[in-house]
Image (tube, rainbow over all chains, first blue to last red):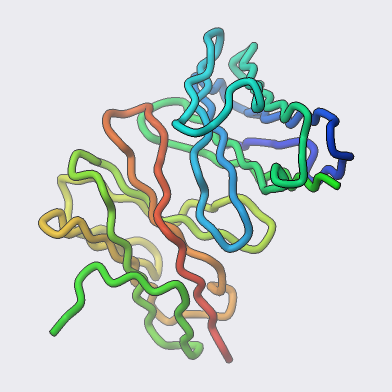
Length: 114
Length: 113
């Protein structure tokens, strides 16, 4: 149990376009979802915490208007990278929790902006 | 003398050796710690966790040690296998249950046959 699915796993887009990444908890209801960003050979950096039905809490330095997060249901959170630029190219990973510190991570979504 | 909390970005071992990966965490209020394994192009995979009221926890071939005095965490892998080759991250829970995990710097483990 406790499977988190991300889609798409890999996306290539042109500079200036927007890209949406979905994070779904497949077999449990996730009260909270977290979005991380990982550059090559670096650690995971927390971007934002997303609670169902409320606005996401962004970490310092993360532009909320750039990275739109919507957590409309207990099984789905979306991250939209708006007006993407090459420097937004990264590996985006979501995780979901049922509570009590148990986090399950998705397989990640690799974004390449040309 | 011993360098407690020394983080090495890479570690190379021979198959069958024991591996020790170190991590220094930042927040003395953190009460939950996890080790993750990440293979190339994939998300983190849970290995083992430990709460701050413990100083040692054992799993299958893995042991996590927690030294709260110096805010140091280590992962020991017994009889390391080529399939253990990956990047290993420690993560700490910042405060109470439900908050995000903050990841430390990773260590790339390479196991040669």
